[in-house]
Image (cartoon, rainbow, N blue to C red; front, side, top):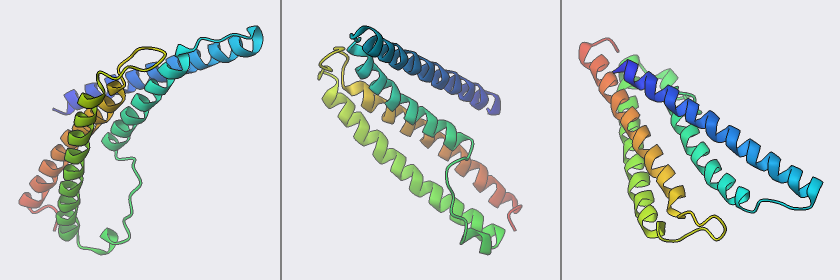
Length: 160
């Protein structure tokens, strides 16, 4: 299972690098065309905006998978390891509920906006909401795995 998670992480990293590279090239090309030749490619701004949304959500999944989000541990540092693990499960369950809300709401928005086309590129506007749907689902899977692992530690009595 860990090997599969690492493979998915590498795929997400490669996708993030690809998106960032494409965004950089498109924006740089547009700047050169605008200032050097007094013209531009209009579609690059819209495509870059779509890519930026996807990059932000993929980055959030990667940061969550590597436990790099900001943590406030002022309370948990003062608790016993057992109580800290129980509190960790409770906060993970609250985050899982938030992931459900994100996935449910963004899926609804995706379906509402899939037929609304962007004015320049003609791409469906729902693509941006699909990014949050996928990110919420992936983070939810990571939270479930973390809850299962934490409950296993609590059940074995290693958190005491």
